[in-house]
Length: 157
Image 1 (cartoon, helix red, strand yellow):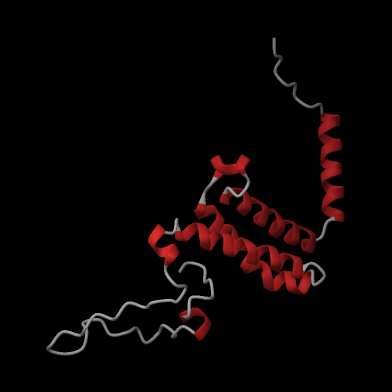
Image 2 (cartoon, rainbow, N blue to C red):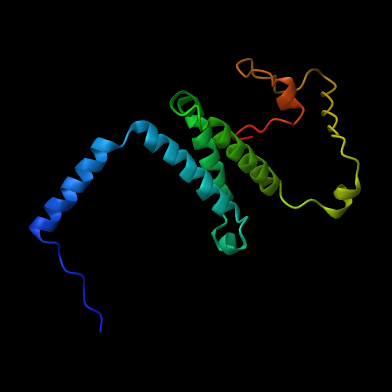
C-alpha cells in the first residue's frame, strides 16, 4: 500500500525558506545566465534526437527556439563569462549545424550523387506588359554575401 505524502511542518517550511534565501544570496545573475544557456543547449541536443535514447523526444521546433534563445544570450555571455564563451560558441555552432541538417530533411538519392555546386533557379520572367506585380520591399535589407551563398544559418529562414 502506498501512503500519501505528508504536509511539511511549519519548522520544515521555515528551514526550506531559509535555504532558499541563502541560495539567492549566494548565486549571481551571471551564474543563472550561463546555466540557462548550457541547459538550453543540452535540451536542444535531446530534442534533436541525436542520442538513440532520446528519439521519442524529437521536436525540431523546440530545437529552433533553444538555438534562438542561446543566440540572444550570446552578447551578455560574452560580457559576463568570457572564459566560457569559446566553449558555448562551439556547442551552439554544432547544434546549429545539426539543426540545419535535420530541418532540411532527408537528402534524395539522386541529389547525393550530384556535384556539390549550388544551383539557383532562374527567376520568373516579368509579364509582357511590364515589371513583376510585386516590387521588392524597400525596408528589407539585401542579404550579405555569406547569407546569399547559403553558408550562413539565420534563425527563422
